[in-house]
Length: 171
Image (tube, rainbow, N blue to C red; front, side, top):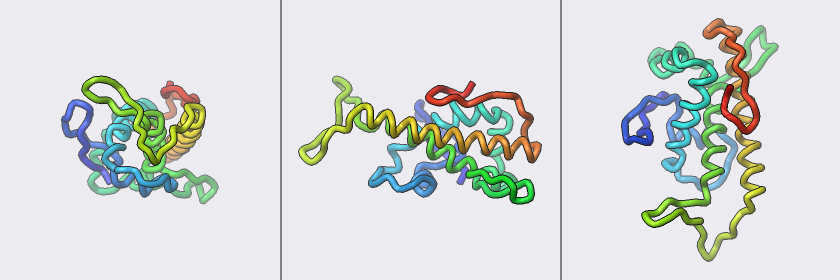
């Protein structure tokens, strides 16, 4: 699913996940326009995956045309079926979706930032949005952590002791 997405500058950039595959990778969340998720995929990959797995390995994944690292992307069992991980597709999906949730109820217009409401909608409380975003973010980081454990086990990367902390960037 390596794809070309436009980043914030309008430049084409390679990413691991594309906007249509994110919906297939996470639990059902209703009617979401795939294109609205594009900037969040870019953010999740650039801020989390590169920082946590390393830029060199990320570039290797993005440029892998032979599906050499398909298992890293898709997840599965390893270590004689004693360990399981979800893979980068799901990790990135959840990380991107958590960013989307935090920004989903606002629209930036020429004049200001507004809440998106209509006659048939009710505003969700900030606490509910934060709780859902944090839960989704935590799950994405958990999946990313287990993917890194797999990559270390397979000797694709070395353990550089970087950690993931809840509600923060990867350290």
